[in-house]
Amino acid sequence: MESATPTQAGGVGASWGAFLKSIASFNGDLSSLTAPPFILSSTSLTEFSSYWCEHPSVFAAPAQEPDAAKRALLVLKWFLTTLKQQYASRSEQYGNEKKPLNPFLGELFLGKWEDNAGTTELISEQVSHHPPATAYNITNLPSGVRLEGYNAQKASFSKTINVKQIGHAVLTVPVPSSAEPDTFLITLPSLHIEGLIFGSPFVELDGSSYITSSTGFTAKIDYSGKGWLSGKKNSFTANLYTTGNEKDVVFNVSGQWTKSFEIHSGPAKHNSKDNLIGNWDPSPLSELIIAPLEKQHPLESRRAWSKVAAGISKGDLDTVSLEKGKIENAQREMRAKEKADGQTWQRRYFSALEDRADSVLTGLGSAVGLPENGDADKTGGLWRFDAAKSEVAHKEPSLSEEEAGKMAKELLGQ
Ligand code: HC3
Image (cartoon, rainbow, N blue to C red; front, side, top):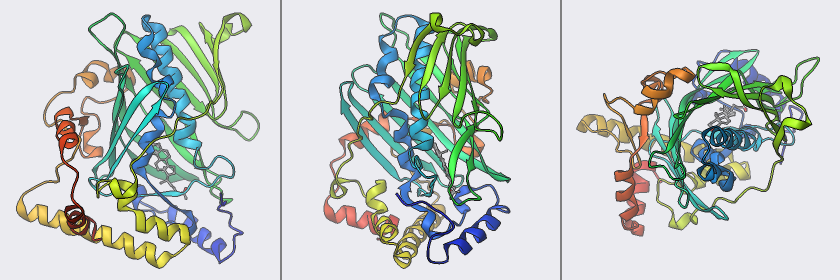
């Protein structure tokens, strides 16, 4: 993969310098960031939801565990194994994190994994455009383990781009021989971009994030990077304790989220070979299966952005801006039409909880510092998977070519 070094040919050095100047004064909305052409990615942010489940058997494993503390540990382990994919997979070797495509409202990314964990389904939908927010639902069918969530980003500039993630995820785990599932509320880590000045951007996580369970366990994960004098990049330490009592550490996990980590029982101060109970070394990923372009719904990400993506991969910037412009204009016109008709865009798989309390946030939010409204004001709503809508979408006959063409013209200008 190419590296975004400022020494690349074609006056890239100059445009990188201009980019660095422009980010020093941007307004916090990452979608408004104008990046130089060589740093544009042809992957939309709706695709990033798949990073949550590239090891489906690790995702499903907690459903086999009858003990609540060990189940919470398996959930923590799964969460930690997703970090490499989420934050480092796009720039593993050289530091070439690019600017993803800004999803349009209603954009979909659908897929499934088929492996020794059975079938795991992914639904990702852009549920809000201003502010931009993506919602997702992932279900492992045999175990019934299900993750749903939504996220948005708020950026600021201080030495580099700092990104606060807004939103959360909820993991529901059926419990062996119990009618009540275990519910886990998950917060999202903050991140910043490193290597910006050298033209080789990559993500480093910072601060802390949390996972709290309905059975009374909380994990706090502290992230740190390579300092000037000490430390390894992508490091973390995590403590799993009984909720409300941070000193009562049942398990601790430490290592590098891009490499490997070790799990010990009890607090870290007692770590030795004797209380080492497990470890993780990155293992092969399960491949996400997505429909071929011609079988996809017109709003599915890869189909909708295919002309833009082709332009990006050929370095044909005229095509990129022409095709992007078509989508943006069609979307603008659609929103104006909806406004004139007093209508709103109907999300296909998710609904915003209007004036209704969300039981997960009400019950568990305070343990991890999440407000009961799920930051709905910053994400266009408190989004939850809508099983009834999903059933309708599943039963809908696929669109004829003519219908698909009409929809693509109307919504995407194509
Ligand atoms: C900040 C980010 C866009 C958002 C990405 C998120 C937070 C999206 C949700 C996923 O679950 C996790 C995730 C991982 C990476 C985050 C991206 C890293 C860089 C990108 C910026 C918009 C790009 C900035 C441009 C440049 C050239 C400096 O890299």
